[in-house]
Image 1 (cartoon, rainbow, N blue to C red):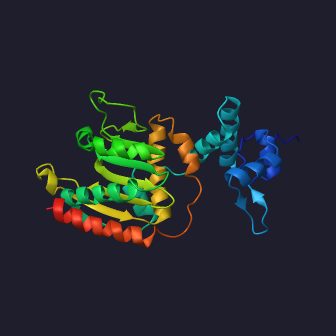
Image 2 (cartoon, one colour):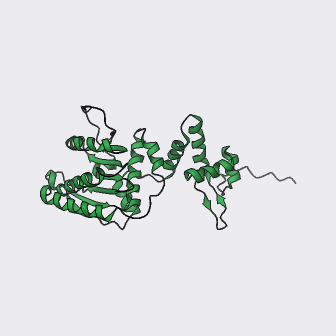
Image 3 (cartoon, rainbow, N blue to C red):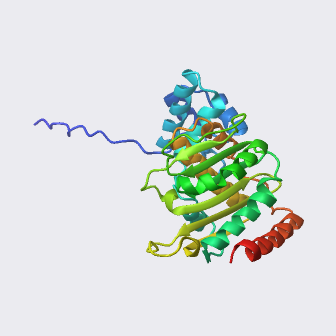
Amino acid sequence: MTTNPPPTQEVEDNSPLTIGELARRTGVTPATLRMWETRHGFPVPIRLESGHRRYDQGHVAAVDHVVRRRDAGVRLDVAIAEAMAAAEPSSPSVFAELRRKHPQLAAHRLRKSTLLALSWAIEDEFCARAERAHLFGGFQHARYFRAARERWTELSRVASSTMVFAEPARTAPQQEGPAPRLEMVGLAVDEPMRREWFVVCESRDLPVALTAWELPGQSEVPDRDRIFESLWTVEPGAVRDAARVCARVAQEHGVTAASPLLYELADEPAHGLADPASVTTLFNRVIAYVDRFGG
């Protein structure tokens, strides 16, 4: 009596991989993988209690991506930044990301007039003084950015990079003099950032992030009286998370400067807070601006 063999079943092998197995699957030597991990923080292994590295199918895909992009002429650091950004859960909302990852941040309901005063204080006190800052601004509608364009043009001249998010302008804005380092990111009407207001100053010495989510059902409310659920922080880790969201969305919209920026933002910032004197000065400026402009 003969027994037919059981039908062949193709089963995806999801068992953890050693660094040698990852090397065989990707064609990248173990020494190179260790070097990438040391220099670039990639790939991030799964560590066993023994300290040995293990990897999964996601690591295989990420390393393959880096190899393909490097072979196509892309710089290694940029290719790695792309792979790390793709592997990280993407949030298209600054406000949602900070609420998810930093639930300790207190949210407050503020009128638009108060948010304007707070934004101007942050722009004048932090963004204009921070060294090598990366600036991000969310304006919802193009007409709101047109009113702030002169301020942000000046800020862009002293920043390392500046990205502005709003609905696409119907006509190209007219510029005078040298073109500033300012990238415009046009948002579709259904993108979460279109309902957000944010100012993010990512810098080592003066980090700050303000983000606010417009509450629905305010179509009949006067513009300056619209209410936003708002929060702000000077905690470096939270500010960097906000900056990463902005850079990822910019990358998804084809901004070429976003990929190397994501690599620069990949590491965690130094622990601590902004200089207390700077925060005190900002607080004093906020009070003055709210008293003058927020009524």
